[in-house]
Image (cartoon, rainbow, N blue to C red; front, side):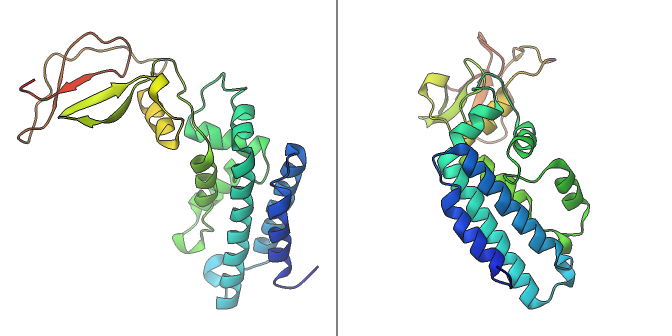
Amino acid sequence: MSGPGAAEAVLREALTGVRADDPERARAVLEAAARRTDEVLAALPRPRERSTGEREHAARVLDAARAVRAAFLDVHADAVYDELTDARTRHLGLDQLVEAAAKAFPGLVPDAARMADERARAQADKEGHEIDQGILLSRVRWPWAWEGAPAVRGVERGRVRLVRESELVPSWAGACASAVVRPTPTSRPRRAAGPVPVHRRGAPAVRPGPAPGPGRARCVRPRC
């Protein structure tokens, strides 16, 4: 199959293959789709030098390839995360996760060399590979990565309520919060010396109190 629309047709067919119940077959289809996308882009000039037709063709191919990645993750995201984290027994930060995914699942996200090349390019020459990383991160059902990690659930009557892992639904927001509050190897629990100064009337302050673990605080209004 050849011609400007050939790659797009192949990628449309791949949408079915990556949804296969057999994960190995789905991975093979994903890798083949990414390889075909790379061949199309490599045959074109750099983005700023492309004609209008070439830019439109590249955009259609990239969109089709991203639809394939999204379809793969819609079915296999939990299996991907389990494999990357050894059945969820080890914590991976966001950068570590996309790097591991690039090695374990060729074609799912760009590898480190491709991202380095993308960062070195002028804006007009970028292909938008960060979008491919976002597809992975937006579809993974994130668990809390360490026991007892708190999260800001919401503000109730002026109080910021911190909740435990058992009350949370796995989510992308949870991963971001977990990365923020997770203790590092060099971190130590601290206790505030007093309320944090406030700069607007009615803003909550952090008052000191027993801290059962790093990243915990009791936020109340000054009048409470």
